[in-house]
Amino acid sequence: MIWILFFLLLLLAAYWFFPKGNPVHEGLHLLDFWVPIWRSSVKDLPVEKISYGLHRQQYFLWIPPPDPGACRLFVLYFHGGGWQFARPKGFRAQAKVLRAQGYGVILA
Image (cartoon, rainbow, N blue to C red; front, side):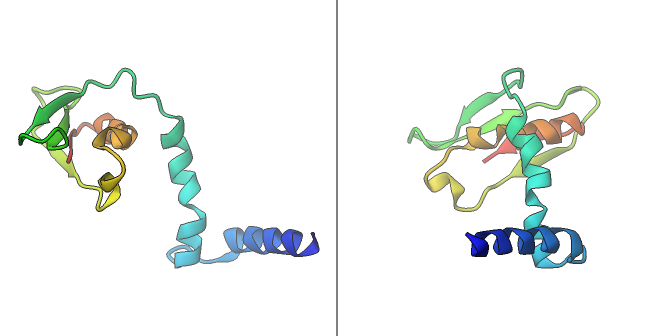
């Protein structure tokens, strides 16, 4: 029990004292980025599924920008290796954040 408490205190100290840019600091602060994304609802996100092949997994998702007439910029979002077991729809929360910045998003 004492070792668990010691380990948790060590993690807490590392969270506060490692300098920004250090891999330990960045790893410990990933939750600051991911928690808002996990809590984000994507029910209102306009998504169009576009097939590019015959197999059912050959598709990408298009999320248009909030103002299609004003924006000509888009982000092509690839997630390396994650779609072997997941699907592009699993990254709609990240697309929602980018769309809020004014971009169109392609999840491929």
